[in-house]
Image (cartoon, rainbow, N blue to C red; front, side, top):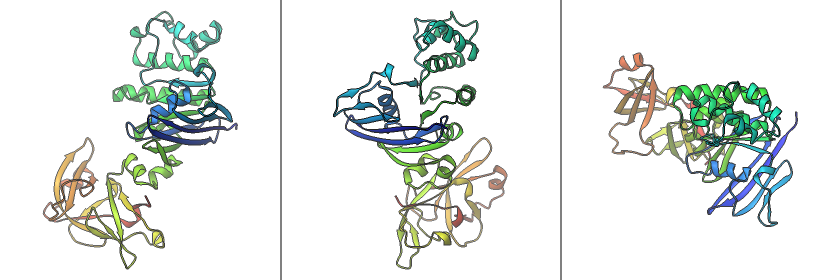
Length: 351
């Protein structure tokens, strides 16, 4: 399979953005996952040529698209990059056919993409007359009709309700499967990134903190930023003790680590996902006597917020979230709550 390499090392608005990706196959979908404002969309716009970096270099498969020092800035239309905006950015004064012609080289190609994206009968309609799904299909047809070598998907579901989001996600999946294009997808939604992509880069303050295959990233994130972005609700700073053990500073307890993790490595943080925690009536290893802060009924479970009994801490990471089946929490003795943190389920991070 043909590989595609992307290198972005730029500076924009007093922030540094660095990303280096060697796409593994010609149809790999790669994600940038990060909180709002970390630089995800700005990075895509710089790659596409919509924004101009203040400094740095952008290369795609060895071709220099931007080099501030050498004063190279290839126009967006010549970069061979397709960009799908959050709001699809269709031209409101153009029909479906005219919008697709903006990407297609001729009318025959435009008609082919109208047929491929099931837009027959909609050719003369304007964007205001289309449903959300029809708008997305029109935007995708326009983008793919230009035959780009790299697709950039900029949080295309961010403003949609859950039902429409799932429908349009499936359409994107089908497009990526059918057309075999390499894609770079940005999102702040961990579930979107997991469903749609193969590998994920975690971005924090404009810098990529780590890149891993999605299964590895969710099972064993290496950084605190990655753990939080992948939905780990319980984290604590660690203090290494003289005997080699660790004290969980935020949780207020001594913490036994898995035997295979003991050694010279000095861990800075630990985390555990809410659904791995269990509640008991008796004390034991890696168990913390807790008091109830709040219980939150979800659609199919109960999320219980707990903190160390007698603790005066009110925020930060001191409150732990435990997700339990509703019937389990209903049968729990609320007067004696010992929260067990299984050593084998701990996520250990060096930074």
